Length: 111
Image 1 (tube, helix red, strand yellow):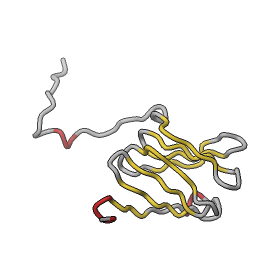
Image 2: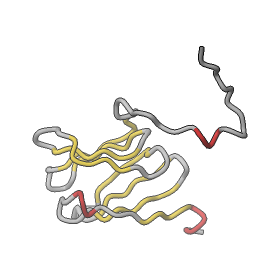
Image 3: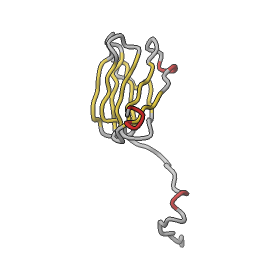
Image 4: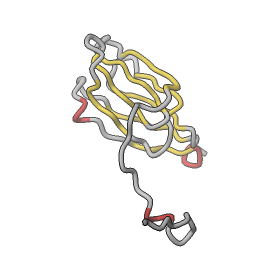
């Protein structure tokens, strides 16, 4: 018989994600200006879909649920706001999702 260890402050750091099924709850979405990418702000991060096939092409975690998402008018930047009141500016270069990187700006930084 297996013994079950109760969750406690002493063992909480041993918890890890074993699997993730589904894409979280969608809070916002936007199309890229060129119409090729659909970006979704979800409870587990940002999901990028090919706008023509609706195939998932990239997922990005920002460490908090994403509540809003928008592309810059020229499509080079993706802006998102997390529920933790942080603004993320993500370079979105030429539609190549492998080149996405991040810069985090908190409300404390903005003054």
